[in-house]
Image (cartoon, rainbow, N blue to C red; front, side, top):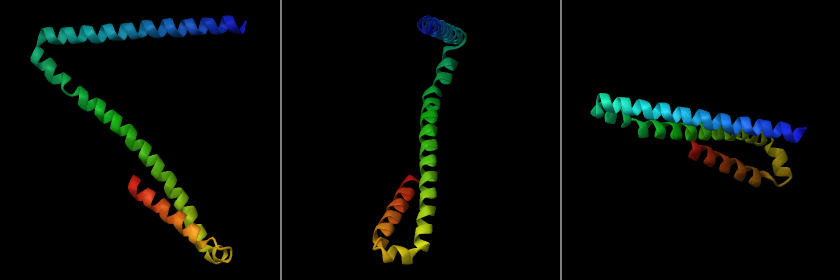
Amino acid sequence: MRLTGDIVLLRELLVGNILDSVGALLVILGTLLAMIWMDWRLTLLSLAIVPWSVRRRYFSKQIRSLVSQNAGRKASCVLGRRGAGAIHVLQAFGAASRASEKYEKQNRQSLRSA
């Protein structure tokens, strides 16, 4: 029963996506042909912004990723400040230098990502 159900879902997924993709491609090609037929210079001008738009989308994803990474690092730096408040405990166990190095490393990473 599961196999037949999966086969039906897979067929619907493949056939549906293929038909949707072909339909969308035909609409794009038809629109481009109509634009070229009306005014080929204006078509070229309007297509000139496509690379800029694609590049903008790519960089916005990278920026969002870096911002989320930076936010995570800031949260860990806050935890580092709490450790700095307990400096006597860190010194007693000989962990002050390790905590200081870790805190400095997090700050450098945060500065680079920002």
